[in-house]
Image (cartoon, rainbow, N blue to C red; front, side):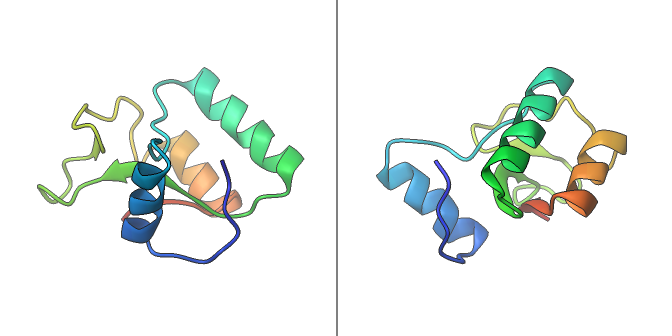
Length: 90
């Protein structure tokens, strides 16, 4: 589900919860590639992902508390942050 209204990370998260959904968690490079392709097809430039370090600075987890297995500052996510403007709660 993509919404076109500009919102904050917390508003996006609340909107997902109200829709019985969650901000996306990217578990592996296959999912990352799928998301990248989907965004290209849909013409979407910016989305929020459910990645946050709000509980502890520089300890990245998904909204469900599971650890981020892809390095948030690593090559793939950094590339997507720069190229596709995907944003977690950074």
